[in-house]
Length: 405
Image (cartoon, rainbow, N blue to C red; front, top):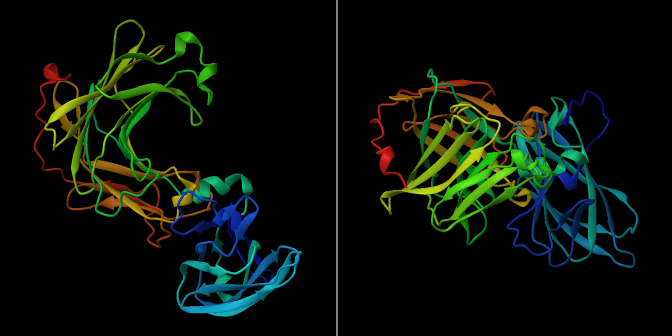
């Protein structure tokens, strides 16, 4: 739990390594390292974030040092104020930045704007009335990676149907929300997920993955009889194995999808009568006007129709965790011989939020469907486990299943 409740004058100590970001990072040396912020004369601005539970006075100190034999000036900013301080000590020394007024509770950031020397900043120390209602930040090094990624959020759908074989969803990413490192996951199910990603400045993907029934983070350890078997894949689709967050079969199509465009996703899951379930995924881009097969996988030791319907939004790049991203999920249906629309969704969040490391994740409804939002250190709070209703007046999907590739 990285939430500090401060009822005494003792400083709140915020490690910079887990709560800071180099702004506009461009794949060169990152100023945020495992031991803290390391600034040079060529560094870009670095910002450290924390959420203050109250308005009032805030005293800020740094624990910092400079390389031996150097002296440097460091320019910092908080709110509307900036100041320049001198750093001369080669051992970690406490440096008082002074007192600042916090006009309202919420997320704040301390900016390290520029330096003319090699400075390491290990901790930020906070005191004052703005901390008396608590401060949200991450103090546990084991959670720094996940905190910098930001809290993932999910929508769980609960259609009142059994033996569903198809799950249909539509996704639209608003303009300016397609940040690098984002996974806009449309069709999640109990055994995998299917959606779109922004992987780099030049690459975007349609991703479809199915987990092995053998629980492991190492795909090489999966027994042969529990590996995900590829049955078929679409043109230009890469297939292979994946690990780290469970393991299984993965497929993706490099495709330059665009914000402000609505894409359609269709997932099929059906037992084959031999103790396996076959999962298939198709993607529909309006500019192509057809359904494209991503892949069909066979999952052994599985005898189930589709269940566990959900969508999620996550950032998988820790250097991009200071940026907000948002997505709309529209027009959800399941099919079990007839189409049934889904008109209810429950918001859930991951451990980063639940443990109090960060709380910038939310969801709800728009005039078009549901939305999820995360990252960017916004203050809006939608309580986790909130349930949303949406009256879906869209037409039933018209899909010739027999004509699918």
